[in-house]
Amino acid sequence: MTAVLLPERTTRFPFPFAADSYRYSTNVEPARRVAATEAGTWGAGVLDVDGEYATELALRREVLAADPTRCQQLPHMRVAAWDALTTLLPELAATLPGVTALRVRGDRWSWRNDLTATSTSFTVGDDDSLPGGPLALLGSQIQEDVVLLDQREGSLWADAGLVTFAADWSMGFDVGMRFLEVHGPVPRVHEAGVVQRAEQFLMRLQPGQEYRRTNWTMTVDRRLDTSTETYPVWARDRRLVVDDPALPDRLHLRVEVQHLIRLGVSNAVCFLIRTYLLSLRELAAVPAWRRRLGVVLAELPEDVAEYKGLSRFRGAAVDWLRAAD
Ligand code: HEM
Image (cartoon, rainbow, N blue to C red; front, top):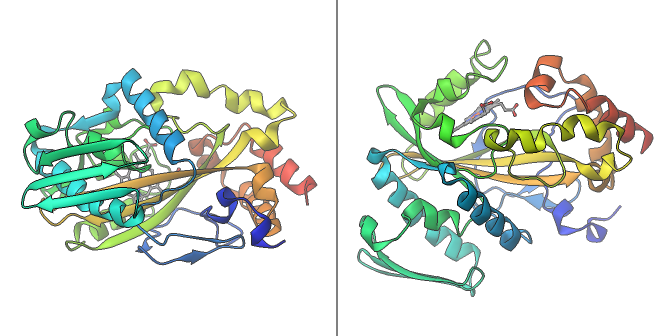
């Protein structure tokens, strides 16, 4: 199998398993290092724009129009929200040369993006100069979901964010929570000290430092909005898919590439979540991935499988991956 024959969705997919079993860990590594997989590469930049750009931004607009609570900002996070915008717009301009233009004259910024038909000017720090605010503009330009964490009283607090593609959690519910509290529902990580170590690590990040990690779950269909708010819409598909002959096309490995960046002006931690979906059938075109996902799924402890929402279909997924071998 040569990578040339595989579609971009596969060659850029951040396949997350480095071994035949998976356990939670504080898996962070420096950002901006190209990672090689059996099918291609990923991870050259902090932001990633791909062929789903227009589709995903249109979906984000729809989700926000239906449910504005996906965007949250506690009053003291104004500076952090501007900090995120002014950190990431130059990054996006560098990621999309030719189709974007950023002009900075002191606090007066102008931004044009031909891909989103955006043309706007604003004064950094002046909310009145940017209808909707900095987080809304940022969310209309990048595929990543964003959470901003304030650091005070020896903790990180998830005090702002624009999250439309959550994997079974809710920004509206989590806003204002401490890092440890946000991770309350996750099994094993508290006893193992994973979240405590992660928080200590994040609190030591220096301005401009950028790290990344991956996380994964599985989703039925190419459904990015699996927020708690829409649970009634998507949850039962996890049961129904088991007897569906289209299971290998409907069941997707869902991988998040998460970036963690200390912002320089506000001292907030910016948490970016970029979600990738690849169906079992697409994944099985890479023999090493087909084999490894089957083994990892079969070996995954039940409490982790249950938390991730895989319990109902993991047997059927393992059977299909083995049969495809
Ligand atoms: C879930 C670890 C950073 C928010 C999780 C899970 C792990 C984890 C192991 C379970 C995932 C799964 O099985 O699907 C970490 C580590 C981090 C980190 C090691 C940093 C090094 C963050 C940050 C936020 C965050 C900065 C921002 C608020 C969440 C949320 C969930 C989650 C909302 C879902 C919790 C739920 O079920 O309600 N994290 N995380 N994480 N993480 Fe983190």
